[in-house]
Image: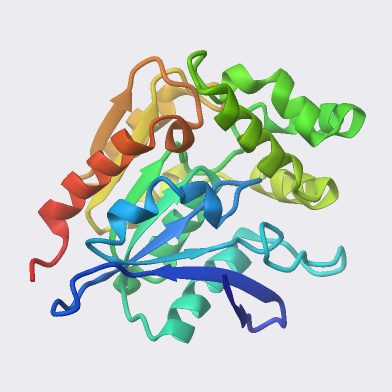
Length: 268
C-alpha cells in the first residue's frame, strides 16, 4: 500500500496494480470497496482487471490502512468523493473507469455526478442510491451490544450464500471485524441519512448496475428504478444472491465488468 495526504490532512492508503503489456497505453480503473471493507477485499478481482487496466484501489478513510478521522472531523459522502478525486489528481489521472461495491458504489455515483468528465464508465455492484430506505440503523444497537464481528457472524446469511467456503467466511469476518466500531457507526449513520434516487438522471456515462436478486439491504425494486433513471444503463440481476456478491461470486462479477468495459473502454 502507498499513501497520500488529502486536502484536509488525513493520510489515506491506496494500491496500484498494473500487469498490462508494456507496449500498450492502458486506461485507468478505480475500484471502490464497501463499508467495513478495504482494498484487499478485491484480491480476487485485481489480477484479471490489472491485465487490461491500471487498477487503483484505495482504502476509504477510516478503513484498512487509511487514517480514521477524529470525532470532531466531519464525515460526509462529499468528503469521500473529494478523496477519490484527490487521489486521481495525485496520480495524474484525468479520467477513469470506476467500479464501486455497496458504499463504494455510493461514492462512485456521487463522483460521476460531481465530476462527470472524470468518470468514463460506471459499474455499480450492490449499490443503491443511498442507504436511507434500509434497515441499516437497526444494526447499530446490535453491534454495540454484541460487537461488530459477532453481529456480522449472526447475520452472515444476509451477505453470503450457504455454500460459501467456510474459510472465506472466517476471513471476511476477521477483516470486517477488525474495523473501528465507533467509526463504522458514524459511517453507517451518515449513509443511512442519504438518498438521491431523484438525482440519478445526472449520471451521463455508460453505467452497469449489478443487483443481488435477494437483496436484504433495501430492495431489488430499487435497482430497477435506478436503471429507469440512468439513461442507457444496463441492469444485471444475480438471482437468489444476498448482498455481498463481490465477495461471493468474484469471477462472475469480473466477467460482467470486463464484458461491459469491452463495449465502452478504449481499444488499443
